[in-house]
Length: 185
Image (cartoon, rainbow, N blue to C red; front, side):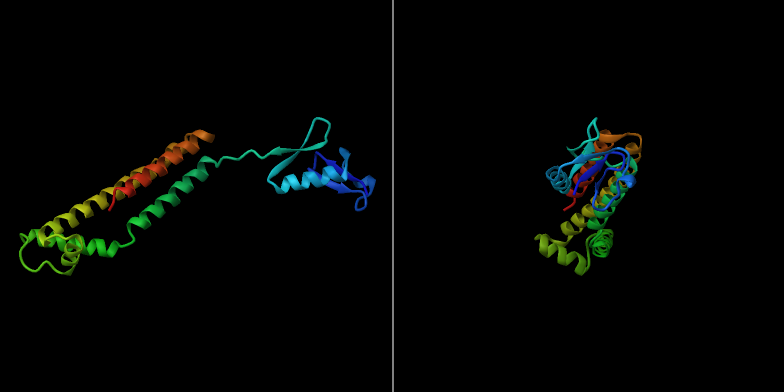
């Protein structure tokens, strides 16, 4: 059994399976040991390429960078993840903020309701300071959503770049999204 390699096809050919007249014109004979080493290298994520004489050798694979369009899709997906995280208790946040605003508009008088009292008890606050904190947190959350939206729109900057520069800008944008989310209690 003889093994051949063809640089033009990037494939191996066994003379037990292929007739000599069906082999590509550029085949070179390789040893069984080289064939096994090349296959092992390929399974170890190395790339088989031909040298100047058409003989196969192994190279480390070049990590391919995502395209700017792929990076834009990743930024959008990352923003969705961040929005989802911040919105995980959206109904609760909205109802609590509405109750706190009503309580404040009423001059902090009357029954504050369960939304405020449950928060006040957990935070160790009286109802009025609890309502103020709830409103402050609701405003911070709204601001965080606005910041995330602005950062997501910076994805257009990525489209104007290539290669490593595009990757670095995308990373900068997602790291800034992380920083925004971390400001929310």
